[in-house]
Image (cartoon, rainbow, N blue to C red):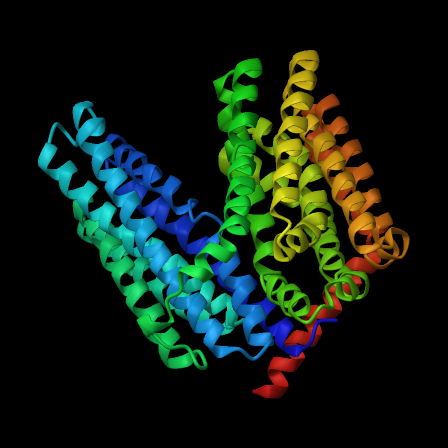
Length: 497
């Protein structure tokens, strides 16, 4: 069960994710209104190129969290420092190679294009250089962040990230207020990257117990030992990253490019809601790693893992069920797109299952089942591609995105089969504990809601109102649960004050 520390970590992870996401949204809006579309579009294009590099950590990011958690559970500070220094050296090497690739790319390809700010090659060069250095610093910062997560220091990390996020927000406000040109945006990104790395690195050595920066701890043996596991993880992540482009390609091919925009708009809402529950559950990797270190992973899976799936199901019922009519109206009004709002409803179906199965997938990551993860992600990509292709080609409508839902169901079944065979997993009591019948009911009502709105589009406000009442009736106990939870939290804070 979750102890007090777990609950505090979950609260801080959720709060940090929410505040930083809101700040990011405001930053984007201010930048959008600060620069001409062509300039800001070029900046986004350059920045997106570096975005690819952030995903290439060869699985050593997750490995860092897992291995440090295990070493600390076994009270082995020497191993903790060996992992820290060895992986730090690896991240320095990889980031240096990636910077070299980006410099090579610029001189060989990008500099020969017409993508320059008002034909100002010098200004574009300055922006590219600043973003390149920023990438190097952020890449290393991402590794240091994993050290904090390996120590389960989520509250401390949350406070640091919030301070840094607000400092960057103030720089964006300054650009907007004083109408500075876009090179200042690149400059402030560089400054923020430098502050992030120096702050994280300094506080890690001051506040994390027994952590030391001594090159004598570096070990090629450590890198070699965990390379296969980490690279398999990276391959599984890489294959998983193709899901989004495949959905966009098939949607654009069968329905037109405007539906790619509708899908991306809906995905923004999904990423915010879905990212919140996964940020709250970050501490799961530490819990699994600690139990794996002492040979109690199977017992933890059968006796404790249900807490996280139950948490996800409660969250899905709240966001994808009870509040979904309100979220639909917000999406429709804010983005002025009925199609985006309906696609969002359709995506609620697979993501309710993804939330439920996320903790099970994390188990396979922690235990080192890299090959199985690779197989699952490959099958998942094949299932999504084939089911989407069939559904979109037959229906010729964005309703065909339901093929994604079918593929998700099959992927969850595969994971459950692996759990039964590998861990003697007891599915029936697990489903009972996580209120799986309520998640099934949610999915049925969601399907009915989608069909009702599509059949009577002109009356969607009345339909949403009706379904809102239906959700409140069917999930009244959940509303009472969330109400009492909030009241108790408020009382706790008042008593402390």
